[in-house]
Length: 470
Image 1 (spheres, rainbow, N blue to C red):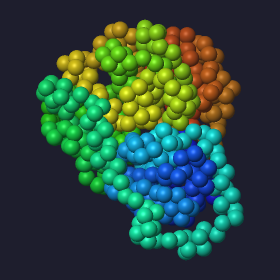
Image 2 (cartoon, rainbow, N blue to C red; image 1 turned 180 degrees about the horizontal axis):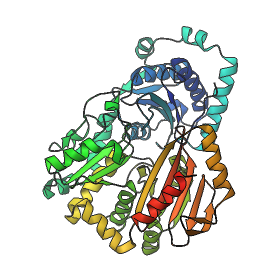
Image 3 (spheres, one colour; image 1 turned 90 degrees about the horizontal axis):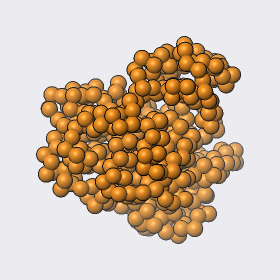
Image 4 (tube, rainbow, N blue to C red; image 1 turned 90 degrees about the vertical axis):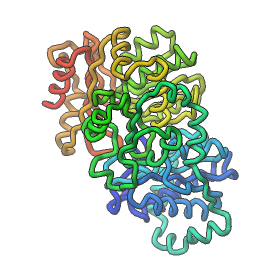
């Protein structure tokens, strides 16, 4: 089986393709790549999320890396992906690995590779690891390799593997990044849902008054995929309304993505969170720089960048493409539709769901307004945004038929003329009234994704209905 990395790491079903043997193969490939890096003598870091067997997979990864001559630091406990990124940067390490499948359903686990800058490994680095992995699959008897691999305990005794409290490091960093005094003075009644993911047992150390749902270890995620979407957060919405909270924050399985719920229990698109963060960073924190977003992000961002005189760049879906821009310098904020937002002008060049959520709370405290009012203010200034993504699980035959139709193109969609087609990642059809429809395949799951945005709900629904009927 060829091991392939998607938009953000290698992910697969536990016990099918995500096995100890395959994790060892990928770890060995990563180790050989890490040994070519300038900071290799400083070592590498291994973090892991709250999924089934994540600690065990992390220990195996550490053993493989250490046996290849690398000094390995490993998290003492479950940690968020941004905590892993921060540990790499703080200790000036060559690279790192995060054992996580992010927002995927519980049956998945994964393997993310991070660069010395803390962000996602760039495409050229991933290509080298994939090539090495393919060679290992052909030439290495992994069963025999594992039989000779030193134990975790022995490697710890020899100081080849060293434990680090990455969560504590992360919490201390957040204390410096967010104006907690402002949030406290505002009397903002805040709730948080880590979705049983890596954000568990974290926020209470920063905001003792916060109320937290699903704040225990549950590798089954309560039978709900740990992705901040309306259909996955119904329990939390009820929790918000019943508790009369002002704001609800929700992070995904590895806490690098953010979602939010207002005082009425309404789920707010991460698109609007991105726009609110941009407005606050420019107008209040006085930050400058370019803006980098994926093709599936709201068109409101264009209008905001025009107003603020900021350069805007669009990339294919996948934060690794946004990271490439961040590493060139001068980026104020970068984000993707799925809730992944990085703010290198303030923090590391990587997504951080909890930080972004706390910054959103700071925004509510500063303006003394609820999330719903803040979004209405945005729309008054930049126009209405009615946005939705629909994930379509289908067969390969049906998927290929849909993609073939999209490739052939359309003159009109839902009665509106197609002005332009962008094919950089899937197919994005720009319509004459500014509405748009995007069709692409997921990089981490076997499905099609349909995205639509318009100024009205009726047009947005018509665009999605057109796509669903293909």
